[in-house]
Length: 431
Length: 167
Figure 1 (tube, each protein chain N blue to C red):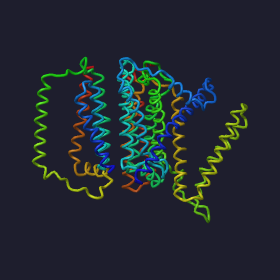
Figure 2 (figure 1 turned 90 degrees about the horizontal axis):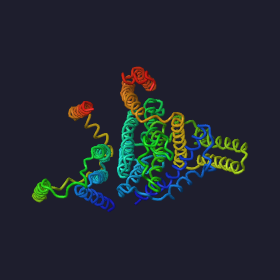
Figure 3 (figure 1 turned 45 degrees about the vertical axis):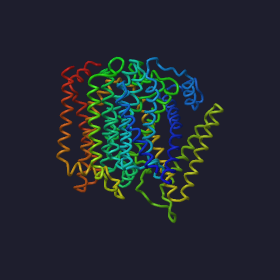
Figure 4 (figure 1 turned 30 degrees about the vertical axis):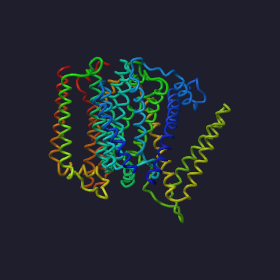
């Protein structure tokens, strides 16, 4: 019975927590975009914390209209497929060394395998709506999902060469044994993953960034109310999922920075660097305190002080767990680092997305086929050669992977400088 | 107990959706039921602790080939107006053939029922079956594997060339 009870509890926690986190991602996206674009946040909702609640309430109060020629059953099932796929992928995600639902031998393969089913959610949603616009948009979106899925997998493969295992826990552990996070060994693989995942995560948004009938999101145009909510929720959870994968595979998972450095405080069993999480939280608390003092609106001021206080409490807790059992401490600190890294990744995804204007679909396809896939393939080969060379000759892997990265970047530069004829003509024509 | 329950649950889904798949008149619905059947079969693989087979089934069949099917269905409008015809000559032939084949299989099972016992499951199945498959592919069966890869590559290039010529 034990084998079922604990995972079941974890599963309930994951299922309940993820939609809330998706709401947080929505707030962060809105606020950050408003900041980057140099304007205030939307005037309708203040403070911004209410945004997910108002958005979802607005959607839920809509009339549940179904297009007259739609296929009702498939229309109902397609968003559920999209949501299920993301939730299932989280079942193998280790958030810290202690918190994971399952750790199968096929971990990463499981995530990508289940993720390949997401195409069905998109295509069936577009088909079931039975309108031209939804259908064509769904096919376009599905095609993009497939090609960008290929890029992300090619990027991750180069890290898998280093880990030698598909299990998510062992991938994180391998980065401890290799002494460095995999992003430093295969930066080009990480870049390919980043660019690929960027495209996947933009597939759902409340306000479509691209013009209506050309939009990749138009496949949900026939969806109203709760079902639309499900699609959007799946989209935001996808952002979290992509960040979690990147954290585990490239950014060392739950390992703290300098995980190999294990000096201890004299006379105790507490490692020197284990105070880092508490210091980070303390620094955040001080920063929020400083910001809150300068605010003028009363409610914001109070809120700012509240956040600062919470940060200090969290810092105290993170310091406090140092004096509990070793396993508990590892679990809490591991979760802290994991969440911090995932948040940082999401931050960079948003940054990149808002910094560059949304490109048209054919431009993205060109980038994908002409640039990303060839470079990712070359990176895979050079990484494999680098690892084998280091194993055979005893050269430090840092050196060989550095050379491999340089070679890959050289190929990328050559590809960029020598475009096929029609592309060169396009560039010259100023299109 | 729970294992048996899961097994019957998955088998019921697999068989049920397989039947639904061949009886639906809407071709897109048939494709959806085929996906369901494939996924249920994958679930049974997972229950037998062959995770690699499970994920390959999900990845290649449900995620890869079925997406191609769905694309083809939706792009080519294979669907005749009002769904497939209910009753036609080829179907009579098909039903006859199916019945004959079913009778053959049942007869074979009946004749060989004493030798159908599989050897008992070994206590510890290696959890590393992904590595085992990889090892077998790249050491023992490297030549057939490479030939199959080249064949697939040739097919892919051929398809691209043929498609290009028509455009």
